[in-house]
Length: 367
Image (cartoon, rainbow, N blue to C red; front, top):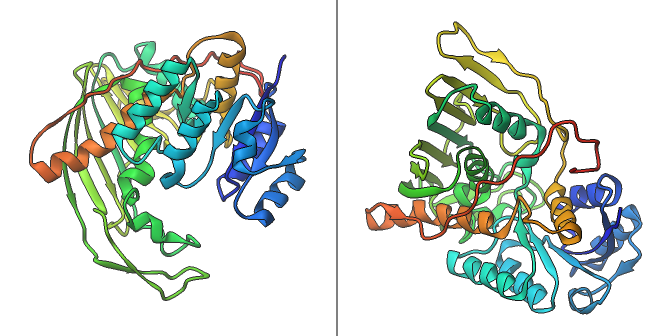
């Protein structure tokens, strides 16, 4: 099996699991260079994962050896790095979100198409065993025709545990842009693309106090809505209710439930790759846990990169592709736009429902 040469730009917190899986799990990926503005972080990543080259971002982008750039920079740099990579003739996979604005995201989609390159982005958790098992249950008719869904991500923000939480309360942050990609990508993978969004937003606290180290006691100005609620109408006709919040101390609401004409499916946390999954068919007296029938129940971030690498070699459209990432980005903005303008937000983008993975895969392979 041919390995695709990868250059990773950004060696922050999320990079370790990508490096772990792209160097030690997936059979078709090979990381040949890492880059970070912190020489210490870059050196640590190279040593830990036996990466031969510590390069600047410019060196990765200009290298003839690098085929695929994995962009793990902070969201404010996503558009710039992705655009430079595409202009340099590289395929690109980027951490969520695709960009900060739908217009920038659409530019990247069009640039990739124009240059005949692959563009994709996180999250790829929908390719894990949990959500893939749910997809199979729906496709096989276990709940009949999906007619509705709920999705809830309720918590009290990052200032109590994250070492540098200020970003989450600035433009590009907030509960929808932080966690919304996981929930929305899961919903699109299970129900297909979204047509219309109606949203309402609020901000409960003007300031937050950091209680984690190393910035304990520092005040953060809250610049964005921290409670986002609304409804989505899918092209299939299904209607979903969604709430993401940093203003809730505790909740017992499930992450995602899908309601069909013949039953209800409880979907696992879409920020994970495993279960549990519970099914209650029409007429049943209780929910029953369903075993996972797919591979990749552990933290498999980077599976979307491996899928893209397979498409680079063998052709095809990656499951975690740019059109999907752009559609999710526009949906997130649509909640805020609908709230700000007091109108329904009609989606301009769409995407194909991602192809499901096969059952019976061997770890490290996607086919």
